[in-house]
Amino acid sequence: GIQVEQSPPDLILQEGANSTLRCNFSDSVNNLQWFHQNPWGQLINLFYIPSGTKQNGRLSATTVATERYSLLYISSSQTTDSGVYFCAVPGGATNKLIFGTGTLLAVQP
Amino acid sequence: DAGVTQSPTHLIKTRGQHVTLRCSPISGHKSVSWYQQVLGQGPQFIFQYYEKEERGRGNFPDRFSARQFPNYSSELNVNALLLGDSALYLCASSFFAGDSNEQFFGPGTRLTVL
Image (cartoon, rainbow over all chains, first blue to last red; front, side, top):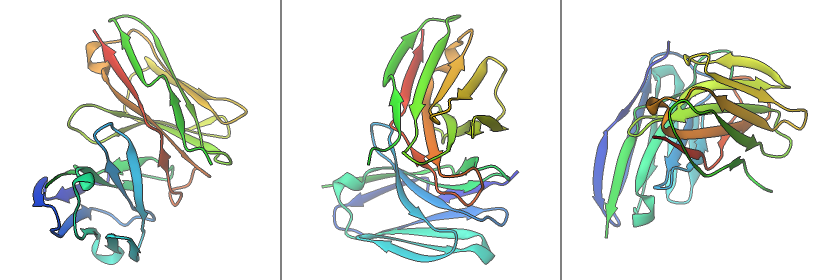
């Protein structure tokens, strides 16, 4: 089955810093989603981005489907950005999502 | 509009008991999927339902079962609970069942098995 890997596994930032999170996947996909999981466990949709670039405030994402990777950019980080960031891709004909290994982000004041 | 809702938020059970978790999808969404997330890992797919039919099943034992109702809400049932079933159970909804449909997740049910 498809493999999804994320890097780095952990990241510590000072408030105001910028960061780039990477998601690599092993096969072509029709869909890629980025999520932020807050400390209470809620998975919050950040981007639905099968290809191209999207921006939402301080966050932006780029997916290069032909090279099988996606990047999530966080600019001017805030303490509320802390949590785990997951990328996920479909694992077959159904809408089953295969999640990456996650990046644990801690933003310090 | 209300997002995906799940109940209960927390649950404590003992080994061997049975549990039922509930999920209501976003209005207009016809597909519901269930995921299990154990501590320190990403969510793992359990089931997908679309128009009341099972469309996919992950690598989970037969103790896990689910169903979808005519109003598109869903239940996940787990029998003969084991300690290893302790996890966050997440429900996701999407308009349809295909792989190009964006999924939206509920807040989860945190199950503790003692």
